[in-house]
Length: 95
Image 1 (cartoon, helix red, strand yellow):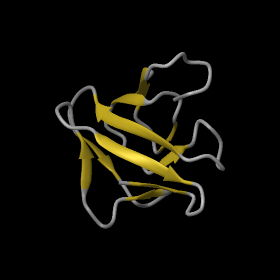
Image 2: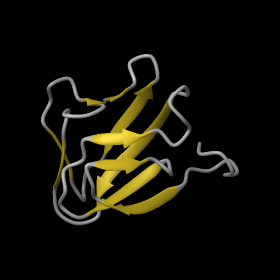
Image 3: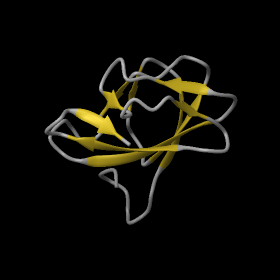
Image 4: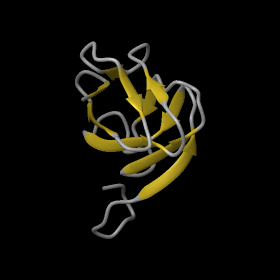
């Protein structure tokens, strides 16, 4: 849960970018720019999760930054999201 919300998951739409700040539990991403970094909305010392999905088309998610996909090629689509968990010890988002 993102602070300031009352017992429910929050959802927000953002434009795709190489770096996206996580400001909701569910992030709808629009555009075509591959996502390589996620900035933890709760700060870098607190574990948290996020569900990412595309609002239109396919958006690549890359391990070039702080996202660890275990070598699995991953894309956001309108029909399937990607659930990532932030691990502060690794400073990485993982599947």
